[in-house]
Each structure stands twice: as C-alpha cells, then as structure tokens.
Image 1 (cartoon, rainbow, N blue to C red):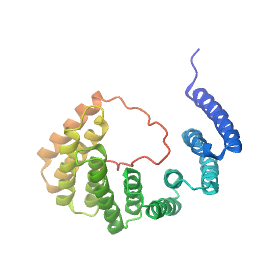
Image 2: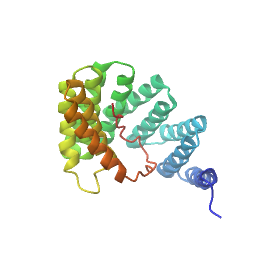
Image 3: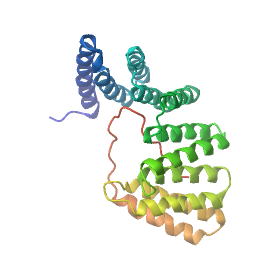
Length: 259
C-alpha cells in the first residue's frame, strides 16, 4: 500500500535525521567534514520547512552556522551559503527584518572574502525582493541591477538567471507605476526565455512573462494585445508539469510572482 504524502514526508525526515546524526559524529572525529554536515542539515531543514516546522529548521541552520564559525580556517563559501539559507527561511516565515539582516551578513562575508559569483547575485536579487515588499523601491532597484550585472558576467546574457532578474525588475517598475519601463524589462525577459535551451527553459517562467506582458499592455489601454498574451499563457499552462526544487546549500533565486 503506497504511503500518504504525510507518511512519505515523515519517512524522509526520519532518514535525513539519521544522516545528520552520522555527519555530526563524523565532524566530532574530523572537523573537515563540516561541509558534509551542512549539506545534510540543509536537506533536513528543507524537509522541516516543508512540514511547516520553521522553528526546527531555524535551529538546524543555527547549528550549521555555529559549526561553520568554529571551523579553522573558516570556509567563506560555506558561511555565505548558511547566512543565505537562514535569510531564505526567515523570508518564508514572514520575518522580513531578520531575512534582510542575514542576506546582508552573507553579502558582507562575500565582500570580505572577495567573492563575487552567481551565489552573491542570487542574494542581491532576493534582498531586493524584501526591499520591494517593504516598499523601498530605490533600494530594490539598486540590488536588482547589481544582481543583473553579476549574472550577466557569470552566467551570460542569455541565461535563466538574467531573465528572472529582468522579470523582477519589470514587476518592480509596474508597482512603481512605470509601465513603459516595466514592459521593456518583460520584453527583455521574453527574448531570453524564448531562446533558452530545453534544459534551462522553465515553461512556468515563460508563462509568467506572458501574463506580465498582458498586464502591462492592459495598463496602457491595449486590451486586444493584452488578451493575446493572456491566451498564450493559458495554452502554455495547460501543457505544464510542475516539479519540486531540490534542497541546496544556498538560497535559491527568487522569482517574483505575476501581477
């Protein structure tokens, strides 16, 4: 008899908990296994979030942070990842000030270590989303643009990450009543998403661009063109099969919702 969804999750948590215990014992024997411990903690914490147990997820990430801070020499990449995971957790938990604080700690650690990679760009993008939610549009734009510059340098202009930041900028400008600028951003995202390879292109993202363009055209009074984009989104969504993300050692790139 197949497991129920809850039973499957309980079983996954049980297995992940054992792996964390094994990793803890390994670190007690040899501190060089801290990276492995953080990896296992990340998986378990992600499952705890899925179960809605944010306090346990927080406790796990705090344990990982303590281990990383105690390590000698410190692994800057590991610290950046843990700070960003904690920030992502607080964001999902609705604790925006703490989320912003930990994203900033991740950026500070990256700057101190001279790190400027796609992980840093992801952090800047996610921090921009927090500022957008707090209606600080100037800071949100600043961090989106900084993220865009880094992603273009690390991933290339025609990449899913660059398209996502263009999307997020479009949403920001639309909220700030700059519809023309918003449309330009979504058109940029569209060009990139339409030219991505099959392994990179997420139909949900492309559908989102259609919806956002439809909203932008509607705001200009062009209801006919708005309906064209909405219909494209409907057809694409009818064909989509959504999948769940795999837990990672750093926060994933957040993509803003359609209008």
